[in-house]
Length: 484
Image (cartoon, rainbow, N blue to C red; front, side):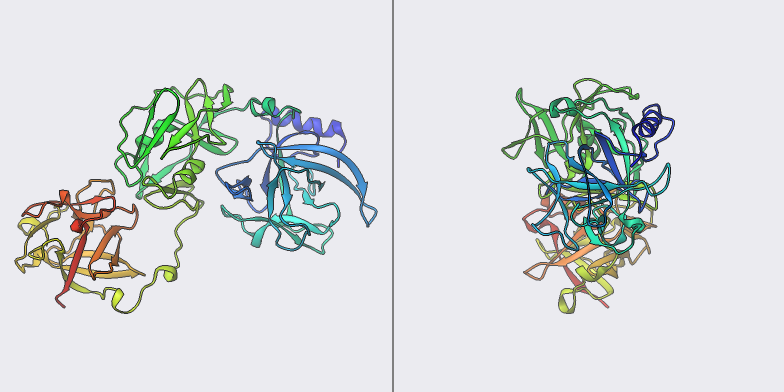
């Protein structure tokens, strides 16, 4: 470890914005940890209390120096406790440190040895249990993607490999009082993150970035998701901020001229959803009394509700991707279709079909007036057998398909929002077609989780085919009658 004066030089540079490089030494203070495997791969604690990598959240940890001692190799070790914002200690799961043990949080104190840096100025540190100096903390599988578990692994090298290294960034001075630490000044800057939903860029006007994490005004999230499969309403009932999953948003966004500010505080606002009262562990009050929520934490909380959505970081495109109607994983959908591949009679064969309404088999999906125009809508109409009621089904992967209008050569598509009419287009959307227990099929927009249904379940000529959340009646189930 380096002398205090060398550390203080680094601290000065960080505090004055001269550099954001890793510190040259660790004294009592608050820090963030970044894996040496890649820039922006921060250590964060997930809702289960386990450590993992995150590109969206840089967890703040309180490091407290606990003294030094020598190990069995006569090397001097500097010992620390590492605590989370809620005062829990970073520790190893289980009683005996072994390969693959995951870092977790617990209520009792746990000691870590910290050694380094291994390259002056921008070096990384190794972190290990003091009784096991070759059992290094590292990113599992030498990966840098979000959700990668933080574990320990035995390494024989005296100088640890890259995936065992962590850059340590100073965030502020420590306090023995956690209430004081929680209100420690932080700088919120207007977020420059690009957001994409349903394949299209979206504008979010009320978003800040703090230490690499995006915080969105709660009402801005509600407005952003309004009309999608993840829409929700939020109201103030005089005691709680009440979140109502599945309901359209009825309010407005609190207008704010975003600018860098240190007027940032931990929010103690109590929220209520489906009868449960709770607080968000990482909510902030920024530049006043407006709540800003960490987007991933919000997605985790809504997972499994009528307003669930996924959000993940697309490292290649450098953008945050939002998927309404999909359970939160924090990761991109698997490209490998093996998990949803279906075989035998459950899987539709490629071919040309009539798509008839199971609610009334005399009606089929139709393009009115045999239009070949881009944007012509899909409706139901009494079955005629004409080409404008014939659709070519082409498998893409698993039970995902493209659907083409035979008469025009155009493809099914939509804006992807709740209530949107499905139209024909030169570009193809991907639909998931799944067989039901009664032999009928549901057609789901794969990018949003919304289902193709007969608007209002009204069985008459000209009723639109729209996207909607899952319904329990037969307005969203169809019979695929193969022609050839």
